[in-house]
Structures are given as C-alpha cells and as structure tokens.
Length: 397
Image (cartoon, one colour):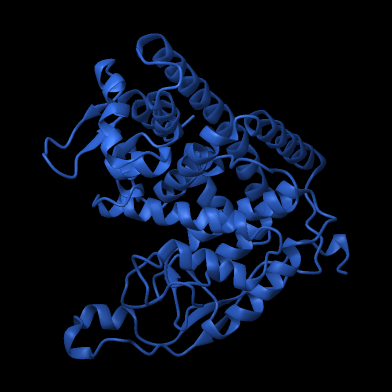
C-alpha cells in the first residue's frame, strides 16, 4: 500500500513517432507541417493500491452528499415503479447533454418506444441502455462489465467500435488529423486493458468513502479514455454502477449528470486537475453535482405527482377502467402508440381506443402525428415537466 504522504500521482508522458492516417496528397501542407514529428502520449499511473486523500472538509461534504443520495433513494424506492424509469432517463439525457447531444423530452420518448426520431434522441436511448447495463452489472464491476456498458451505449449506432477497447491513439481537442495540438493525448492503446483492470480493482475497495471512490474512479476512467467514442457517457454510467455496488443506491438513479451540467466547465477543469495529481476538484464537482441533482430531481418528482393527481380529478372513467393504468404508464412513458398501450396494459389491440378515450376527452393525452396509421399520443404535462427539469439542469448557478 502506498503511504498517504506520497500524494496522488500526476500523469507522465512519453514521446512517440507520429504516423498520419491520411496520405499527404489529401492533407493541406500547412496542416502537415503543424503535425510533423513526434508527439507525446500520456503515461497513466496505476491506482489500485493508492489511498485517495482529501481534506477533512471535502471528505465530510462528500460523505454528507452520499447520505443525501441514500435518503433520496429510500424516499423514491417506495414509488420505484413510476420514478425509476423517469430518473434513469433524465440521467441519461443529462449525461448525453454534457457531450453536446441535446434532445427534447418528446423526441427521446418517441425514440424509446422504437419509432424513428432524431439522431440525438436515439443516442440518449442508447445511453439509457448503458445506464441500465451499469446497474445490472453493479454486483461485480469488471473490465467485462465496462465493455458491456459500452456495447449497450453504441451497439445500435456504432457497432464497429461498440464493446471493444480502442486499438488506436485518441486525443481530446485539437484537430482530427493529429494529436500535436490536442488538449490531452490519452495513453497508447496497448496500455488500456491493464489500466482498466487496475481501475476496477480500485473501484471495489471498501476503505474509501463511496462518493470519493466514484469520483476518482470516473476521473481515472476518463484519463485512460479506453474507447474511440463514448468515454464520457460510459464513465458516468460507471459512477452509477459503483454507487449501486457500494450500497449508496438500491432502487433509483440519482441524475448526477444533471448536477454536473450546472458547471460543465468546472467539471472538465476538475478532470484536467486530476491528471496533475489534484483529487479535490473532481470530488468537489461530484459532491456539488450530486446535491444539485437531488434538488432538481425532487422538484421533478413533485411535479409529476401533481400532474398525476390532477388527472384523477379530470378523467371520467370507472375505477377499474384500463384508462387509470394507462395514466400511470404515461407518467414514466409520456409518448405511446397502440402497440405500447396493448403490450404494457396487457389488453387486446382492439381495446386500446377504449383505454385512450377518457384520457383524450380530459385532455391528458393528445394525438400529435396527424396520421391515420402509426399514430402516437403524448402526455404534454409530463413532457413539459421533463423539459423543465432539463432547463433547470442547464442553468448555470
């Protein structure tokens, strides 16, 4: 075990020859000159046996934030059916938004039921799958579990790279032609499997405060950058896997990424500081992001409860009518088509109009495609609440 006094190691670097992937005759000479000669790639220290030490105030704040997460999880756990799916989707949308993949709530809901939607909405749905895989695999975080998260994230959109460690050099910033002007050049591909194996050994330790451990593990993952694409979203999914693994959450997903959206620049700066051997900024980013996320998510849940209660007063249907079960479904799935209604409610297709009719009459749902076939209905109040959550998440405090 490394002594506490040694501090957290900064990354090193090594010089490597640059072999451009494009022939000279298709690249402007000025670009070739800027990317001539060797470049330097990161050398990332292993961390499995190192003790992450932060100041007493930072540690106390992280422990308090983890306790708030656990309390939120317990409160929501009693109503896990409607809200677990909502919170998972909001986390996925927020994590995607950090990567500039923005989408409205309706487009995401349309994509989630398998109908054609925007490319960004489909990317968010892939992130939902990655988050769910992270939770499903939380019992035993392994390199294979990380690959499974990435496969779930990009399997439909980028199958050629999904679920595979990268076999090429990657970098952040600069140009796509070469790494010489990059903000950060990740370690060489050959280092990735060993570094990820070391990371997951660190991730299952029980002698580190859970939120500190999750923040450090995330920063190390982003430093390794093990994939050609999808590193940020997979790395934030890993955070939820670790919070579940260490018992901080049991029932729902706290949308931590929505809290990070409050100060994305600060979050990225914290990852940079981590590479220089500074732990506290990334722990503070996740502590503050977690608390902001709980506040925002609590407001969302209260709005959805209010919306659902309002429907009880306006919908006219027998107490045993399928319309009430459809109303409950709409809280977590605010866009539906006839197939979704029949499948989720377990009713024959010919009974779907009867289930929809009281809700349409009350204005709870509206048909928005204008088509005679492949029609879809939306619960506008739920979509508005989800869009309001996203707006609050993106509002810098």
